[in-house]
Length: 406
Image (cartoon, rainbow, N blue to C red; front, top):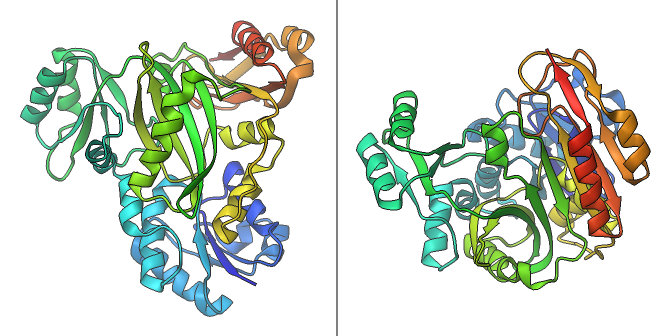
């Protein structure tokens, strides 16, 4: 019976689904390390765990190592150490190496976490990506912008998703950004060429260094556009057929990029662009399961439980390749402005027109504080055998549902 330690600072809903998927694996003994004390966890969850250790900061390598050492004493050793959050991957890798636990090591984890280092790997291996550079001073930022041309994208080297990522359109905006975000050797920032094209995700499974499975998602529009314009609603579509020539570039370069970064076994989330001429540019990759309900979307597209499948992959190195049976789409219900949700309009119309396609929804509650995030205050997921039907349903949702915030 393998002893599995699951690291989760807080048990947010999605994280708890990955934990439950791990607990559901037969023949495993699961310990939990996190920030929450035992008396704040669900008693049923506590009864299913083989152990629990609270730490102040699971992202701190020294604290995580101490917690895992204590957990190893309690369980009689650790055979597998996992966690689904991107920020955890380097501390987990450091702890694995310190305790001799199998899994992704520090070098590969840093390749995924440090986006400037990642792009250097891509350049060396001739993987297509945006022109980029880490800047440690204002003049270096200006020189990069003059060389590449505006617009440029600025992001922290260890960013996650689109958080703290901004588009800079001209020299005036660059000077304003530098004034509020002074860069230095202690606080470098990554500048990139702004790639024009349709943005997608490439979620991919490797087993023992071999590409086993991938899913492709199309963004409507790109997350950066949604972050910069709060009036834009965000939607994504997983086409049923992803075998066509429009995805040939990512089918070739995506797995090659992951091999270059050092992936052996795992599920990763990649963001990439397809330009008008058909060429691609990989934006960045995270060594973790996808967020923003994408794990649910992939589950619905293939009639699987990806949360449990990720756990089986990480613990046993097993992944049963599923058939893509459906097209799936999601609309993220986003309130306009700051404040609390007053009402959600258009639901009756949507129910009449596309209600039979809805497989999951989390509607904003009256009185909840609007998140201000591009993932919105709720979501609706639709599914059908035909991609065109899903795309039409997404258009209906985008045109009908409005979250009123005041």
